[in-house]
Each structure stands twice: as structure tokens, then as C-alpha cells.
Amino acid sequence: MLIKVCGMRSDEQVQKIEGVTDYVGFIFYENSKRFVNTTPVVKDALKVGVFVNASSAEINEHIAEQSLDAVQLHGHETPEFCSLFAPEISVIKAFGVDDQFEFDSTADYEAHVDFFLFDTKTPHHGGSGQQYDWSILSNYKGAIPFFLSGGIRPSSVQALKSFQHPKFAGIDLNSGFEQAPGDKNTSELIQFIEQIKN
Image (cartoon, rainbow, N blue to C red; front, top):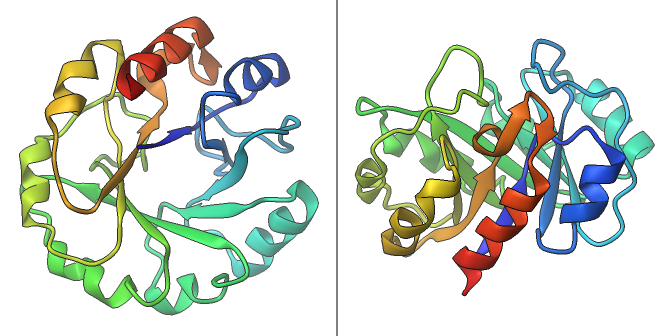
């Protein structure tokens, strides 16, 4: 199971958790409470830049300046827009999910992205701490692997161990492990990740 910890802002906290996570995410969306201008140093994980309806020029600038390994597109980006970055860099396309979500809408993206990320649908493009009904994901029949996101917290261990889907690739951890926006409880994160992997 791949592990992605998103909304990081602190050098010290990144250093503590990067040995147990595959991806460290940094949010370049100015309306987010976890917005960063520049990223902390990351040595042992892949760096993901999170964007919401940003221009390709802005994204490419961050890719170059921050040495990003992947981009997560969390807005209304089209398949054609996603294709501007692949295959040079890994692309994660996020979707807000509720019980009305049409999973067929993901099909046009399959040739242009590496992963999907299924998050709780809110007006704020993630970081809500709210969890949707994961059983809805049984309606996803696509070919692209996905990250499960939205409201995962320390108490989610057993639910995650019970969750099954042929394209389930990993989890995205964020607000459920925070003391304040962008301020992660690293000891809780490390303990949780060890429980999930064992």
C-alpha cells in the first residue's frame, strides 16, 4: 500500500515522517489553510505538488523550482490539461466523491494520468476531515489505480484493513492527523502507518 502524507509545511515534520511515507504532498493552492510557497527539503520520499485550477505555466514553474516528482490536480482540470505533464512527471487526478458521483466521468482521463485520488466532495477541494461512504468505490470499474482520501484518521486502521478494491493503490493522509492546519502529529502518523503496514 502506497502512503501519501499531504499538506506538509514544516521541515522538522517532513524529516520525521519521510522515512515511512512514499509521497509527501505540498499544497500550492492559495485558498488552502495549508498553502506553501516553497517546500521543505525531502530526501527519502517523492515530492507532490497539489494544484487547483492553476495554469500550466504556474505548475511547470513549481515543478522546476521545487523539483517535484508528481503533481496532484485537484480542480476541474480536463484530460487534455493533465496530458501536458505526463509522461515527464507523475500525474494524480483528484475527484470529489459523494453518492451522486459518476465514475464513468473518469474514463477520459485514463490515458493521461498515473493515479486517481478519490476524496470527499466539498466546496474546498480537500482537507475537510470528512469521510464519504467508501462502499461507493465499488462502482469504479476503471483501469487506473487510486489513492483513497478523505477523513482518514488514527481510528481508521481496521476500516482500511477491511477495504478491498482491485485498483486500490494507497492512502492519502492529511487533516485527520493535524493539531492545526499544516501542523501534523508526526508520532500519530508514524504509529498509524506502522499499524497499516503490519
